[in-house]
Length: 433
Image (tube, rainbow, N blue to C red; front, side, top):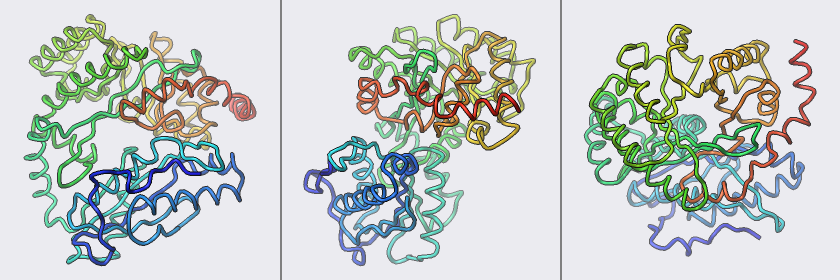
């Protein structure tokens, strides 16, 4: 029995034409991000049956040819629509359908889909280019942890950036922005103690625009001020809803480098946080401090004095400076995922991570490991004394209601402790190295 709704249950959805009739064509690559975990749980044969059920469910959600398996965890879905928006609608329906657990053999399974695709007007269809763009979109989706659709055939990248910049200002005021939240688990407390707010943009014609595309544009155009103030305001509103449901968590917001030297932004941000009366944290990078250290450190101390927790993001990815690190009023240090993703396959990365943990503890900071995607990495981090973990193994970024369900189910209880036992050998070998 499947928990996936039938297409009829998606009221108001735009119907799809057969794949050869649509004005727009799309190749969507659907990857099961936690395939290895599911296969270990079910075994090889039942795992394959689950994959077939997932493919059949996707086929029921969108009209057109049935999904085509490319590998055990990857399938192609061909879509067509009369407008570009119909393709984004299909993407949203697939994503929404797999937010709740997927029913297989009367048992619920969390299926983490990674969705990347390419869309092109039918008059400019080029299958090779379409495949290449879809593959690139899938790579971006793995990194960003959100669905990505790339549009094939844009005439000029500069023109595209100008168009995005023009649309961005109106997009903020029109309510096209929304937030996802990624939980962080405290390894000793065995509980989610905070979340990171991640901004998303649902463009009315382009669909979901990658943060990697619009955040740099926002910084160049100074729309980053309005975007960040909107984020703070929305986080405060969402935080009140969380508190009303019994989840009084601190929410961390990313602060761009240019904003730390902007006294006007700092005043407005402080006013919002003070009026909101909720628990807020700001994540900043070291490079943002190095640009204008005097202003940045002064403003960070103002934030800290208000009770805003400061976290140093992406530590180790840039030019890490101990001279600045000791001056910052930071409570948390986040180890860049570059070191965490290769933690169990590299000889040097564990040494770097362990020394960073020791350094942060000496400076009275807690340590967060970003990009935790495997049980083995979580086990090793726990043994090393890492305080918190964030990543796909804990949870993908979630909208507010799925986040509240995740928190209420207490799915992280025993996660780190359960991870530690099967990988005691890994920890032992690391200690001997």
